[in-house]
Length: 301
Image (cartoon, rainbow, N blue to C red; front, side):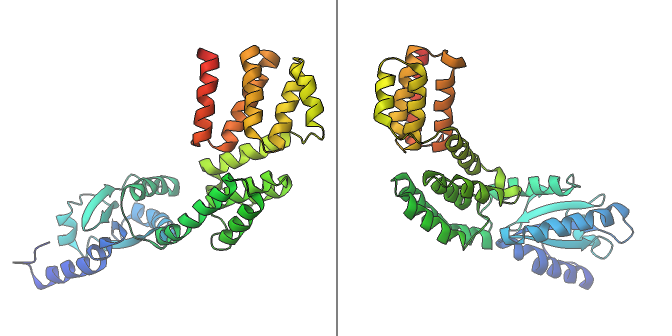
């Protein structure tokens, strides 16, 4: 913003804007609120802006208020024709018009969309970068079947970020794998509403629901003998016992064989159980992709 030919007051306003808005926007997302003391809608919007930007401070969001009466030159440069007008600035450039967001939910939704697209520096992003390799390690240990060690790692990480949804989901799935279903349910129930909406939490809930549905079988060999005779009820129970024992390959093979023989048995119960298993493992997991191809070959081959 050039200062050549400006009055001393305008130069002062420009320098203040650079200091308070443009420079912080080099690393943060700055929400600029153009307002005036006489503006009723501005006063109604102020608490919303202040609350949401305070909540998003750890995400790298700050609030800058510009009084259009005291800063007419600045308002003119941004072509502010009515107030309240609210913009978002990053790295010295306007990146969004937030004026239409008049409620907390609307403003949060817009900020979330912006933050997903921009490399805004924040405490939260730095913390996430530190947690990422630790979470990946715990997930690999859980994938390898060392459930007790995976739980120990997840619980140590949880001390750093107790409400992190991916960590909570990992803890819950490890607890389910260890047969501690009630504890797993407690972990998920303790999450705040916003943290409990992610896909990773849905995966943990699916694992929990499946664990409550299937029960350990003391004599799998006896059940296998009944299943080998073609008894569909026995085969269905066998699949549940195999799941409870952690043998998802055997459970999947049992269910796929049932579907191939009679996909409509018991109103499609075998397919429904198999899809629950896929959801519990994770729909993006390569193992699930391979099993889904087998299922598709049976259904559409």
